[in-house]
Image (cartoon, rainbow over all chains, first blue to last red; front, side, top):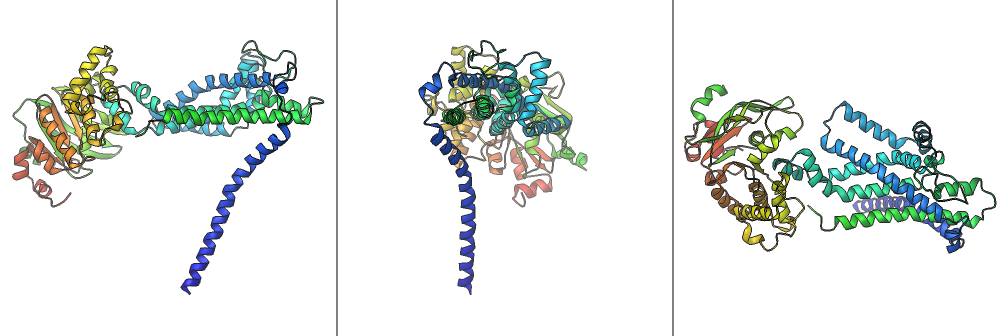
Length: 282
Length: 265
C-alpha cells in the first residue's frame, strides 16, 4: 500500500514537473521562432547595399531610430529618475503619493496609439513642435516614463537603509545622502532600466506615427530636432502596407534589423549592469 | 506611579552634565514608546542603557540626535537638552546637531567606497576640500578608532573588504572625523565576535577621555565592564539610573533587581 502510494505521488510529481517544463519551454519557442523566421527570410536580402544604398537604404532609418532613442532617453531620464527619487526618498505616504502611483500604473496601461494621438495634440499642435524628432521623442518619453520610474524605484530600494542612516547621522541632508550615497549605488539598476525602456521605445510605431515619422527616399536625415525623421518601425509599417513593389525579402530584412537594434540595446543593458556592478556588494 | 518612583531611583550624576532629558515622551503613531524619561548624562563618561528588547532604549538613543525624525509617524513631547540647549528647537541646525552627536549603528554600515572615502565622507560633506587637511583628518580619525595599523597600507581599498570588527571601528573613525562631542552607540557589538567586541570595548574606554559616550547594549556584562553610569529601561520607562556598580549590586527597584539577576529579559 505504502509503496503504491509513493509510486502514485512520484507519477503526479513527474507529471507536474513536465507541465512546468513545458510552460517554461513555451516561453523560449516564440522568440526562437521570430528570430528564426527573420533570419531565414531576411538574411538573404540583408546586403551591404540594402543598408547603405543612397535611395531606399536602411541606414537613414537606423540613424533616425538612434536619434529618437537618444533624445527619448535624454528626456525620460531626468523626469523618471527624479520622480523615482521623490517617491522613494522624500515622499511621505499620503493622498498625493497614492495619486502619483495610480497615475504611473495607469500610464503603463495606456495603449501606445493613444500616446500617439496625445502627442499629436499636445506636442505637434498645441506646443507647435510640428511633426518632428522632438515631438516624437517627447511622446516616446511619456510612453517609457512608467517603466523608467518603476525600474529606478526598484534600484533605489536595493540600497540598504543602513547606508542612508549612516549618512544622515553624519550630518548629511537628505539631498546630500541621495547624491553621494543612494544614487551612486543604485546607478547600475537605474541605467539598466533606462536602456531596457529605450529598447521598448525604439520598436514602437504608433507613438511616432502621427508625431515624428515620415517616409522619404530623397532627403532622409533630419537637420534639426524640428525635422521629421525616418524610423525603422515606421519604415517597416509603410513597406508592409503602403509602399508599392517592395521586395518581400527587404521587408523581412528590415524587420531583422529592427529586432537587432532592440536586442542590441537589451544586450547593452546587461553589459552596463555587469560593468557597474563589478566589485559592488553589501 | 512613575513620578513617585523617580525620587531616589534616578540619580543625577555629580559630573558636568552633557545631555539631559525632561519629561520625554515619544510616540510611534499612537503607541507610547517612551514615558516621561528624565535623565542627566555626564560629560566624558560612558553611560550604558540596558533593558529587554522593545523597552525603548534604542528609541531613546535616537531622540538624542533626532534620528527618530527620519522614521515615519514619530512624535516627541518634553525636552532634550545638549549643553542646556534644546535639540528640538526649530532654529537648530540638524546637520550641526548630528555632527556634535555622532552615532554608531548595530550593523557595521560602511559606505561601499574606499576606507579613505568613508572617513572623509563627513568632512567633505561639511565643506573640507583641502587634500592635506583631509589626509590629516583621516589618519587622526582612524588612529583614534584604533584601526590605523591594520589599514594604513590600504586606505584606497574597499571598506567592504574589512572584517566585521574592523568595519565597526571604521564606522567609529567615520564619526570621529566630524569631531563630535557625543558618540551614541546602538548595540555596536551585537553583530561582532568576542575578540572584536573586546577591541571595541577597549576603544570605548580610550574615547571616554575626549567624548561623551552613550551605549545601548543587550549585554549586561558589557554595561558593567565599560560604563560608569547605567540606566535600566522597561516598557518605555526609565526604571532606574545611577552609577553602574550600585545599579548592578544594589538595585533600588525590584524590577531592576530581577533583570540584572537574569530573572527575565
